[in-house]
Image (cartoon, rainbow, N blue to C red; front, side):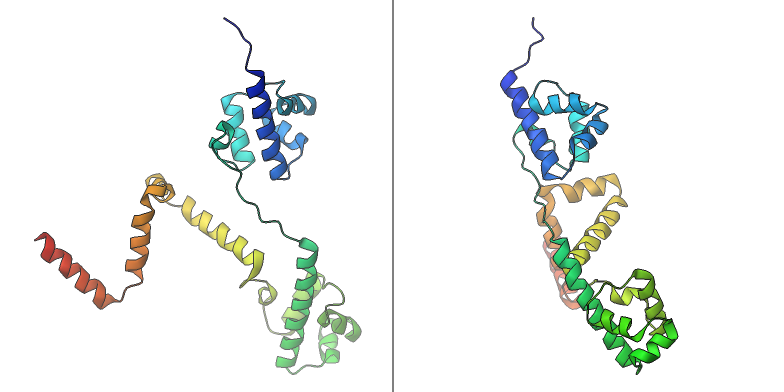
Length: 221
């Protein structure tokens, strides 16, 4: 018997691990810590010179957010939408400035009036409204209070990446609250047709649902 492993397969597995790590923007130090290795030993894993166990791969699948099938060579890396954070924040500063001005005009206040209520300078408020400088969050709280709105009035909650992010978190939270058998049912691709049928039924008018139910009773009676 031999303790040797297939060198080509070890290198391939190491490459897959490296690819998943880089895809998720993780450093070698972070992944090494997950496996309880020092950085040098982990780098040997990516080179195929240091071998991981099945529990190690399971931990990597969880940490790097990849399916286990990826390590068998039959799965693919999940798509990650890259966000241009600089452009996003620049645009959001301008949008918040517009919303701030709209709410000030709605409350029939001048920049000087709002400055007096908040202790900020009128020029500063005008600069915020023009999107020329970011509004510190604590200033935004103060301005919101003076304008009779919650700070959530300025949160991007209808469109864009934050809305999609919040929806995913809410969906995940709801999924995790389901019993395990329901989670398995929803996660199974073979049950997609049942879910699509349930969605269509939920959108039907009550009268049509009643007619459908009566038809089914007639068929099965």
